Image 1 (cartoon, one colour):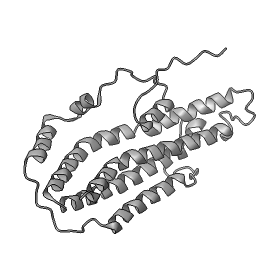
Image 2 (cartoon, rainbow, N blue to C red):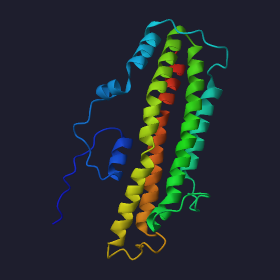
Image 3 (cartoon, rainbow, N blue to C red):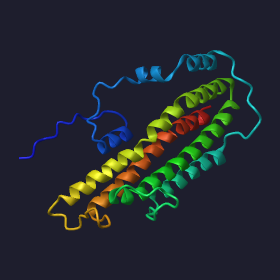
Image 4 (cartoon, rainbow, N blue to C red):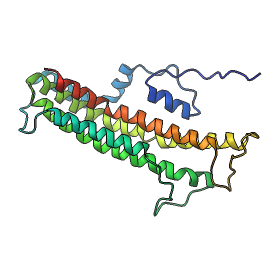
Length: 238
């Protein structure tokens, strides 16, 4: 009888649980609380800047477009375009001018890694541009909302570098996941399509990996759009 896994369940948002499944790490049940982790990310300079944003009168908003249905529709179009790119076929051709891979598995995974990196860059650029534009429009609605916009600007400047550093590790986790799925299929006597180190990867495990990659991208897109969703909710509140 197979022995039940002793791996502790990972608590947290769906994206974190998904990444934990890709990793060999059993997780840390004693991980710091969110408040403790934020305290580590806020140095005293950032804390002072946040305090000023909360306590001082907000700056006068620059003239510009106001939020309306057209602006809301544009946000939806940007998100839909990113979703379409995530769901599109993955280009499996080797990247030009790329360093030669160390082994066949790394070479086979390289196009997937490049695809993930490309989607990450597209999400970062699009979400950053949207967030800044929505924040500017929020500041034009009222003094209270201008204060909220100022706080969001401080939070983005403080947390985004940390967020980007953490998200940059996702392709490596996917690489580990790819390797494990490949190895499991290669050692499965019932899997007639399993490939070895000398043949092109194929088989049901590869379809599983591709779906997992897209699921990770969709989860990351949701994470990157959380601040935008919050700004949209504030803009629609009268």
